Length: 229
Length: 229
DNA sequence: CAAAATAAATGTAAAATAAACACTTATATA
DNA sequence: TATATAAGTGTTTATTTTACATTTATTTTG
Image (tube, rainbow over all chains, first blue to last red; front, side, top):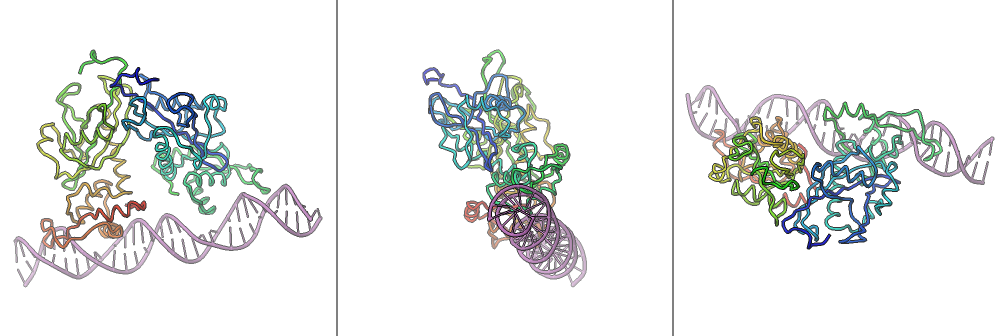
């Protein structure tokens, strides 16, 4: 893609995806290493261009699918970035979306073939263009969203322990939470199913596994229920 | 603008502005009556197309200025609307912005020349395209924003009474507030200057006028201070 | 096989915040 | 001078949030 080939008055429409996952007590983001110019070799968010007959939502889902092989993922439009020189090659407006996915479920091969890698939030390198800004905005939004709607469950395996859930919230909100207060609050939401099954990997005693009760959640969500953490 | 003249693969980039004002105990929105096709005669938000060398923020400010004659107004990007058929004439993606302005300060002539009119939120007509959806989203965002940062002051005259301020918040949040609790809360924020001057139009006793203390507000805002109403 | 080590599970009291509530005051007008 | 109108002001109660420590189940180790 060279400057000479681009009509002067063309504005390109891109979509960039901030893909969050949770693993190993850490909130992570999926980045790709560019194998094309400009900025070849540098890390960036996964992105692409809008097609003629798709919405921005469609484009975001398509891009996410291309990288992870995953469908039906929670995504949310974040912000349209439009600084005139944000992309040095051509005028490009990028609408960013963030997604939260279960890190265990994605397609490893696809990720490898895109030179993609998960980065802990504290270890994110300098990204191309305004992608660091996009990421910052996404983190802020995710935090706010998580303390209102409990979307965080998307980031966990189907069955999880209370400790895992707490670690997830601590990672998202970037602060330590009191174990008892956390459990009481979660219990009061009444959207978890406690299973008669224990995870024995974390301790000798073992800890009960829980599932997210999608049905109860939907019921409550209709009535604007929300959580404050 | 006729379909025949538009290249098939062209995507237009528009910006639409939801302009809020406050008057007469009512939260209002400024709408224009279209004097061109399609949907001539119907009401819509004020909008325009992005220019080659401006950001979306620039475009939103320019559009607001064209209609109201006002500069340096609080504006916030809302959402990019991208349904493929949202505009029947041509594929157009519109990024919406909302603005809040002091209804006394705008330029009446400009507004008249655009066939524009202020509508109370409860009396907004059917708008073209997806503009009602844009407005709904803007109201929700304004409510959330107002209960976090006290941006509402932009909607009042420079000097205002506590009653006016309360009415404004009641209009934005669409619920009645207790007079004493409201005043205590506002006082505790410590961002108002009480003047030695009374407004005598509202009662025989008269009520003290207040001003917003921009300096104190800025100081507090730096430290993530916020308000919950 | 007893002791130690590890993480899980659980409830209550104190503090902070939010909500409910009613009377007095100043002034213009009747 | 009596009345009507909106302004101004604090306290009590209810709710929510925060702080905090001990017991339990099981495996590992000595």
